[in-house]
Image 1 (cartoon, chains in turn yellow, purple):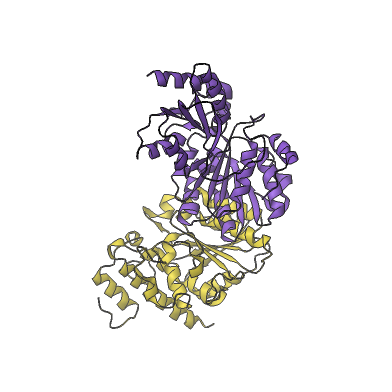
Image 2: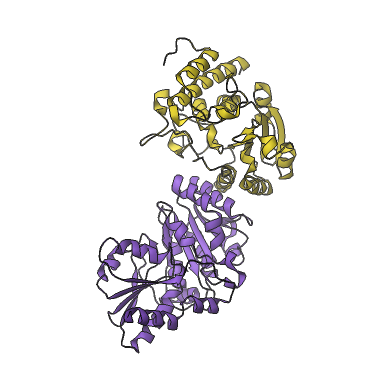
Length: 277
Length: 319
């Protein structure tokens, strides 16, 4: 697929993310940590992920575990891009009774959501359970993509699970670390420095690599890389808030309110015309 | 569903409070290839390693991950049992349980061994005295505690047939008293009257305390006090029918190897508060972590021996 198509998809996803965050109003979406994931999700959903829009629980589908719950909205944008979500009206206001799609995902396999997020550090162990289940069922086709944040890697349970996945040589697991460098209290390098993330994952029995998480070619290459009987960790260097000037690398855009004014500005920056509030 | 003939029942009663898990799951897994057991470095202690074969999974000493692994397996259509020591599989992994069971609604089966005071010589770390309180607060969770090995086997068997999440709490060590010496109908949420010699006191007990309460009943007889002893094997959902049925008995008593806050006593009190006004004497751990001591000494200290239970009841009736 042409890089141009992915860039176009990524732009549309960013528009969706801004739209969803705006709909949340004072309930503030996780704009920053969604924007950093866009290219990683765009390439995955458009070029690598196995799914069937008419049978979202098909046994041979790939599973997605959005362990960093703050990325849920970006996942819905990717799902919209490939037609799992048909129309943005389905997403609703991301709140309240009767909804399917929430600010942080709530498990609903029939709608393509494999995991309830919101408590950091639990997705990888859940993926280990899925991986073992797939093995027992003789399903050697499906892969499990787990998205974790770099701040999330502070959680000990990430490493507990990483150790298990490495020990069990679960080569159907792909962990993507969205290393956007920021968490609520500031830069991760100031809070719990992990300069050596590539080596750490390697030490836990993963094949690991570092990429520019906004570079289409590098992302594609990383997803395609052989696993050689090991789980894989892709350390993706990204920019939190990527694509929105006032949110890029700004800690307050971890979770923040898009006012009418900022919403219009964001849409304009993304090239959307004739947007009104 | 296993067949409980006399040979099997005799084998069951030869197990200890941990071995019964491997014994039962080992039989169940041959009937249902969806049954798997995941254990946290306790496979040998619970007799699981050989019994489970390919359907056993070693999760290492990582109870938090173990719960999430169970959830992933349930997501893929398996019936996963997680087995570890009670304090670590509940309190340590409480957040994972909250997310797996509460938020995702996955029907995992959690088995906590050596609950209550039995590992008291190891100190507060190894005493599960808060596990019922924690598990009871998780929406949709069923909380069970068997009174003997046959009831434990029946529970492990029964819960494989239901979709809901379950916590099974095992107390005691070995040479367990037999409450059920023959096959019986086990039903979640329907408690069993295991002994009765009068109607002055109704004792609701769980786990090893059912046997202690039956002996207390015999001691109270000598004082002219007649009792009903109920095995309240299901703490959640609590059997409201039996609580209602005995609500006019002069004294109700709860007996448990658990903090009197949040456990069986609290579950009964919640029901009683909505109506009868029946007085409830709660016997259990009085909101502290006990000093490390032997199992018998701790039972004595917290009024969980037949003599102490009887003594507390006599005093309560006099007051």
